[in-house]
Image 1: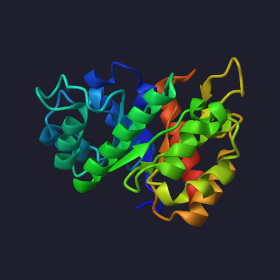
Image 2 (image 1 turned 90 degrees about the vertical axis):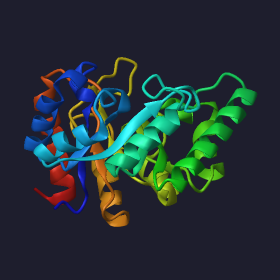
Image 3 (image 1 turned 120 degrees about the vertical axis):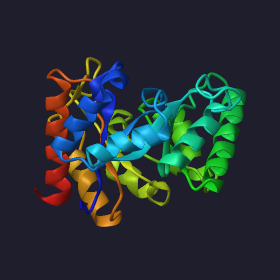
Image 4 (image 1 turned 135 degrees about the horizontal axis):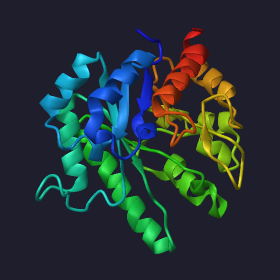
Length: 259
């Protein structure tokens, strides 16, 4: 058992992964991960019991799913339920405690205020179901004098947690360790992502081979967050996805387990 669960965000396998989940899960398990995070859109064609059986076949756990957009919108997969209600119902049946959310892009202050209120309400609804809604950042939350990231860390409901992406924190121009220290009380998981350059022609690369200070971030997590799930997320790779996720697992095993 890993001191820090090593989790694979399966985005590296591309948009058609829902049609080959057995292959994806086999690769993830062989690489040494404890489980997966993935977009709920890749799983909703399976009933929770079917997904649980498939994960069990490979000794994996669903640590989190990822959503974006309007959580109050009707869900195509669940009739009259909202996107949030559908996700919570699915995760409750899976015994999964983390729902990762990306959003809060805004054009006006009034729009931001409305969306932020919705996010806080969603976090509180999820919390009552025993599920943590976790905000996942990109680089743009650090724009506009950090309006979005400041609100998430300083002003959000205590029910809202964070799954920060330390690669994107770096790309947003913030000091990663300072940021993690500041967000410490909200952390429920951490994404590790690396970039070839700070831009403008960046691409995601194998963990530890790019410009993000991932070793420093890992050292901080080891010292401060025993047992926190750590998640490898590489949006796309120049090598086959199965090779990329294996290399990323090896990096996480090295910095968190000394393997």
